[in-house]
Length: 165
Image 1 (cartoon, rainbow, N blue to C red):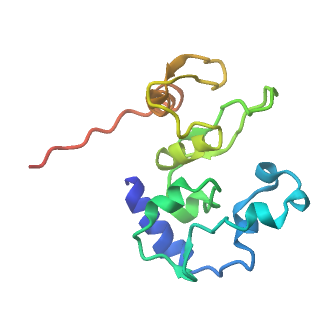
Image 2: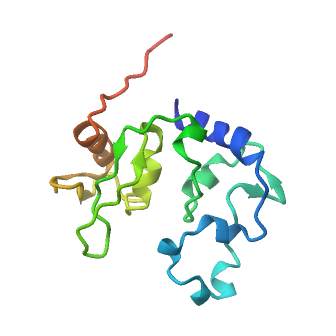
């Protein structure tokens, strides 16, 4: 299952059946990501748009990248609702100097989106980054970190595209 088919599935099955919240920003943010919600003023959230809504209705598919690249992380339904198989739990050290791990369930299809929560996004492909998985701290190129985690820490083999034509 590739990223596009996952997004189509989420839009078609999960987003079309649920009620839109009265405050879309509130649904998309967690207290951990925002801190104290009462400290937000209206000017900082006035230009924030729920990525699943476009001109008052759900989107038809043309703005898939907007939802994926939104700085606000959409709430992802539980694995059993998405029909995804958990392959392990995130052992990335949380930011802030504490040596506690994230612990969130991971699936092959959601790993890249999950790593955005840990700051692995919008970096130059050639930049070096340190793997903060428990017991690792290997230095790798930014473009290789997702593959490194999949293969080394989650024990998944790389999928190769078949040339059919």
